[in-house]
Length: 221
Image (cartoon, rainbow, N blue to C red; front, side, top):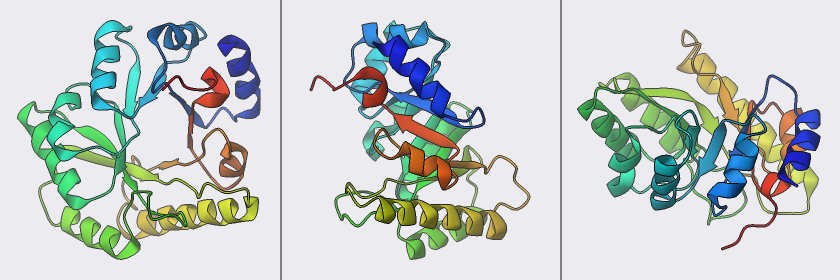
């Protein structure tokens, strides 16, 4: 099933868009099936689960952390994580930088922006986002590479609302690129779009999709 799902999904995704296979709560067996289909980028949202999978699965997997990351758990994933999607505060950014500096590593991050009409979702509001970027530009965040932005749309059947939220995130990305990252080619990613809304996300400028159930089926919690 996973092989068939991936084949169908790959037909719908342009080659220039990166696919993160969201493997959280799925067993190693399922991840290996996707791996054997050629997938190498997998996303996890729980630190303990990610550590277990990192230690037991092939070492050429690129692990992305896509969940809400607590500062006291940053140190556990810094040695190997490829990209942290959900950086939603300056305090978290500082902690990532501090732990990365300890091992002389530069860690790639995305700034999570609150774009949904739901208070339960995490992310910067615009004022805090700009304050943080001013602080970063004037400080020694030498062990962080800010690669772009991430956002989650409202869980709704209103497709136009989802589209407008994704469009808003793309506008924020463009503004940040102009104001803070115009000379930084690494600031290039817009992580938006999941199983239910990835087609809209593609149309609105996503460069990175986080897709789980469309590939692996329903999760076993």
